[in-house]
Image (cartoon, rainbow, N blue to C red; front, side, top):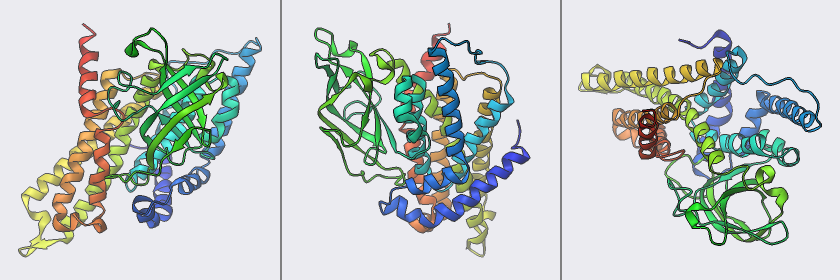
Length: 413
């Protein structure tokens, strides 16, 4: 794959037009003035029929699982091997991410966590009853979802430093105490996937089971904070969760057992996040380069456009190298999906590491090209620079990606 197909280019233009019409005029409100982004996202989902597709896929998967549970003979799903449809679906996921991130990366983060992480966790690990009860409203963004793992002292060492505990109540249920922070959609979430440790007597804290629960806003003892004020991605509300003797039944235990969604399930979610970062970075780099090229042509100093200066040309050339590399990474991901192949941990982490660092470098150079104007909010490149920084932090910091890459490579010997 060396370029988008005609059909993909048509979708790309449609999404870009939607963003220009519906997102850009409201950018200051959702980025800086505290207006929640969900109405815009719901309009996007309905405009492109994403809600209809989500419902169709939901009904198809549920019907299959019910048939299997009833003991009916069901044709085995093809897990591997080439699939043009799988590749096309991957492309259709990437294109909106790229286009939205040209202006508001936070929208992708808010939508991805709600539909992809929260809804996806229930669809992949939940019981049939849990899927029927909670999944579809998350997959269509009728309801807002959050995926809560981080804590004040548990960032990169999410499991080792986790303090939030679920204690068996002796009647088949659990009582949860603790707190979570830096939770995307936390302030407005209707449904929360809460990852915590099981309070097991006689078991060392670092060896305790990781368990997950499905919580609803308004539950007694659950408090959701107001949105944080952040450096960037203001269009993605972030907050804290406080849990004080929150009582839950076994029906809220994700997957129906204490072993259904533990460390491996949460780690699989991180892998899913990393694959999308290259697309996010590509959108940001494309926009930063467009604004920089335009400014380099329009801005004159010492009697000529600054774009005629070799130092500015060098910056622009490096931006194009970065854009090409990121696009090739996205194309490779689409091709691998079409072939039924998965990236190794090293590959996924390397893609995330390069994409995050590249987005930050390009955005920083865009501000430099714009000079004093680039430091002003009006230029929009300052927003790209602030937004880019989070790519080096969430879904695993740069430092953790390096460790993951090295460990994966060394384990193959």
